[in-house]
Every structure is written in structure tokens, then in C-alpha cells.
Image (tube, rainbow, N blue to C red):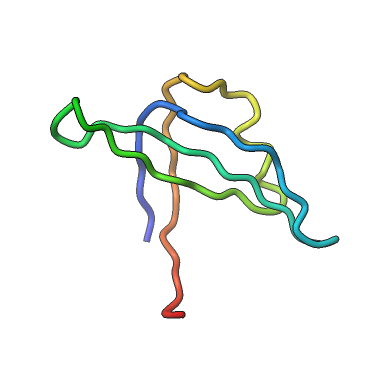
Length: 74
């Protein structure tokens, strides 16, 4: 299932090398959903070869994120 979210890049974390073959990078988007006094924050995770996609963007910059929702029961 594919979605798009537009908002401000609130936080960009450093890349983490979890194992020799796995790395990830997290970032947070701030967006307004209804009342602008209470912005919402969503944490995203980039993995493997995608971790550098966020590099050109600065905190505070408006961005658009296209993402897929996936999850597991446990």
C-alpha cells in the first residue's frame, strides 16, 4: 500500500550500521493534520541503499515522502 506525506523535515539521524550487511537511517517529518497548534510527527526509516536519499535535505526544509506501509503481527 503506497502513501504520500508532505511536511517539514524535523530531524535527520545519522546512518547506523546494524550488521555487516544491514544499515538504516531514521528521520522525522512534522506535518499539520487539523489544528496547526498540534503538529504531528512521523518517524520514517530508510534501509540499505536508500539511506542516502535524505542526505540532500536540511532540517526545517519542506519535503514530500512517498512510502509503503508494511508490518508484522509480532
